Length: 170
Image (cartoon, rainbow, N blue to C red; front, side):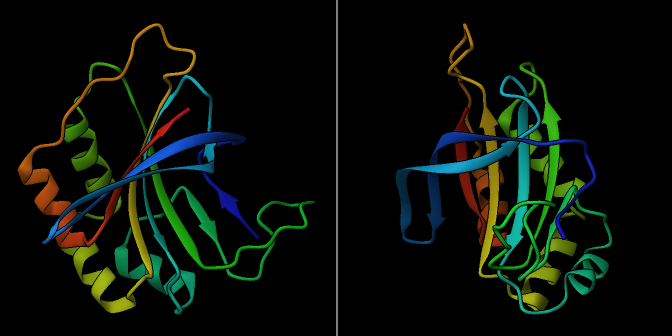
């Protein structure tokens, strides 16, 4: 069963732009997808690991930090919903404010999820199919448009984690 430890989540549709950082350059692509967020005006950042074969509890134990969302392959996404998780997933989500820089919140979610060295070791051990950091930015109903940047040093940390950086405009 899905466990969410940060409160009730609402389901909304968003447009995500994924920026894939590789040693060969950067690739961007836009796609429509579903996204869980607490409120449409809340800025969140989520660190996700998906598609690992080992039991979820073992991955959490190796990271050493309790995630905000746990999904186990084959179990219902939510109570009373027919959909099931197709892959194991754990997520670490934090809320951030307008005044916080993207660089800072990316580093903050990495620390919240166990720290760079610990995550690098856990990823090497459990080999998830997908590692992602997603910034959920409320631009549709916002009077302000989002601006921000990500420094080369933070991008190098994402490369070390082999993580996709995505932006969800909700």
